[in-house]
Amino acid sequence: MGERDSWLLEPTFQRAIKVAATDERLTSNGGALLLREADHRLGLSESLAARLQDPRRQDCIRYTLTELLRERIYSLALGYAAQDDLDRLAHDPALRLACWDRKGPGALDERLASQPTQSRLIDILTRGPQNLQALRDALADWSQRWLCSTGSDRRAASITIDVDSFLIRCYGAQSGVAYNGHYRDDGYHPLVASFSVGGKYDAAKEGFRLGNGFLHAVLRAGNVHTANGSIRFLQNVIAKARRLARSFDLRIDAGFIDGRTMDFLTEENVRFLGRLKSNPVLDRLAEPHLKRPVGRPPRGGYEDVIDLGPYRANPWKHAQRLILVVIDRPDPRSGQLQFEPDYFFLVTNWRAEERSGEQVLEHYRGRGTFEDRLGEFRAAVGPSLSSPEFRENETLLLLSLLAYNLASMLREECESARGGCWDLKRFQNSVLKAGGKVVKHARRMVLVVASAVASFWRTLAERLARWTVPERWRPRGPTRRDWVSPPRHAHLTVVLRE
Image (cartoon, rainbow, N blue to C red; front, side, top):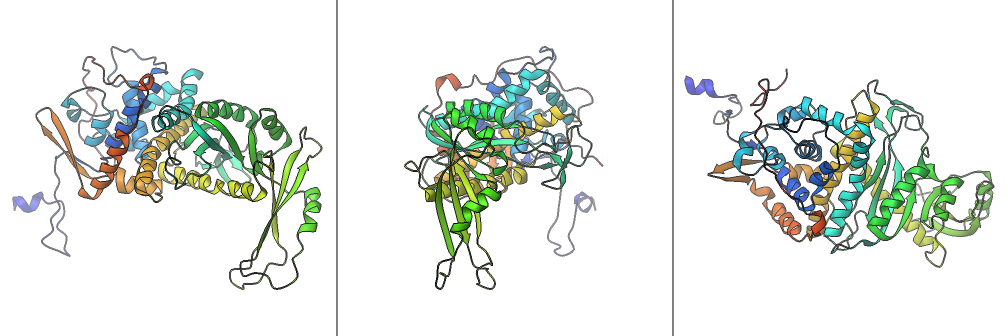
């Protein structure tokens, strides 16, 4: 009778199956140790914490800023966006081993910070402009460290920077949340910049996936125009890009293409490419090129790229190169051409001898891989901007982007070694959320992971060992400090809320 009472569940479909509870050190987030290894080799969290001002009494704290940052960023990288998840993850053995900043096996018997303590971290990060700026600058700094560690401490030869905005839906009365007419929903309207080596985030060429990541970001109110604050944003992006690569160019969404922005980039001698919204003047320029040739059209239809040469609208200070793209595709169901061909305009300051019209179009279409990254970010990290204060939500957004960059480092190392393309959500579920058990032998702690992920982990271990980190970025590692016991009200075991 006692044995029967110990089972949690006895399924009726198969009486030989029993479900029981155990106090063994089991985890479903073994990949936290991979995140810590990449973090430690590059000195990421440690360098960020060193730039922050901590107003707490250092002789009374239990968790350092480095430990708090790791716990929050690793949980986001593993796909836990809600702060309430931290109360449960505080007891996860793999996450405890990954985040704790002291030597020895004591980490296995500790617990991480609770959700209220993590909320105080957000308060610290929003206290004064210095901390928020350090958090924002960490995006480019972390990417630069990874890029240099895989490129013998040298900048990339050439990178492409994509700039765009998107909507983060919100469902409360947070400061700055407003209705956006373009997306037809309430939320925030952040502006982000991301870079890729060679212009494609999923390039098959060795080394062209390494270093890719978000470079700069700002949170904006939901009802602002797409180009609001774009000049100041681009100034920051350009300054950071010059530290990453010897040459770079920009791909910009149509919402940012106006005379003021293009004149600024031209005067900064920065190559750019964007889509130009149609207007009656441009439609008249396109009209002579929309006539179909005589005869039966090819099965795939037509695609023509017409270089229209220099073009300058009235407000523009500098003329720009205008390219017309005419796409005349048959209907996929009927096989018949549409009544009229579709067309759009590209505007750029690339000279014709540098890139032909066809090369400009191909380069612009590489933006599709950047838009895939935005979709990945929302699906795999999914920032939950639920704080009532605007600055706190911007802090959460920046932490989410840092988490994406860190997880993507491992994902892209795996892609480069094994080939193929991995969606970040798939990488989280297949590699990072690895089931395992922590076994303690004397002063040694062993994480035994499922054999299904062993080959991926072996590949990543070999790739991480190849990183050559410059001396100036090497971390100091754990520091000795007095042990502070957890408060009396802290739960030392997992307690799920009703």
